[in-house]
Amino acid sequence: MTASINVTTVVGNPKRLSRTLTTAEALGAALASGLGREPRAASVDLAELYLAGIEPPHDGFEHAHGLIREGDLLIIGTPVYKGSYTGLLKLFLDQLPPKVLAGTVTVPVTVAASPEHRLLADLQLRPVLAELGARVPVPSLTLIESELPELESRIGAWTEANLTDLADALAFGRKPIGAAV
Image (tube, rainbow, N blue to C red; front, side, top):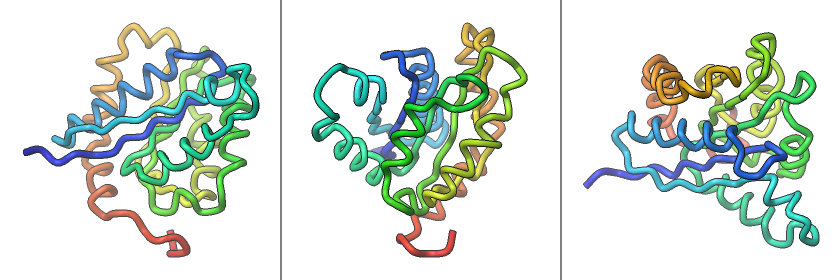
């Protein structure tokens, strides 16, 4: 029997069921497969959580918070808007308690229209995730919209280049809240 891995995907695209969500979920599946583990996947599409036109997100935020606490691997995805990650993702991250991601292995994913935005995840998103306690042991997956038709091969190449470091980080395990990161 193959061991499983909890892969949680959080995507801050204001468009429901976006290409960013598809990309982040595909990366999570590829990583689980590369690790030889059966994925138990859960996704949080922040467009549905915050923009669905419903009253404030009822128990949606608490549910999303629970999913990221339970995950072994967290994939955070965002399109690049005006040279930064989305306000929707910022809103979600700002509502999380301090060190909620303590020791959680996290991989940022960005989809941008322009090659100039390739470094956004590592320059802007990585420090926010680190502040929340996340361990970000590998470079972010950064794709340009024109690369999306080659999504499978792009994810495959990224996974091949980073799987060993990611596996080592996952083997190390989660640190308790308050531990040095």
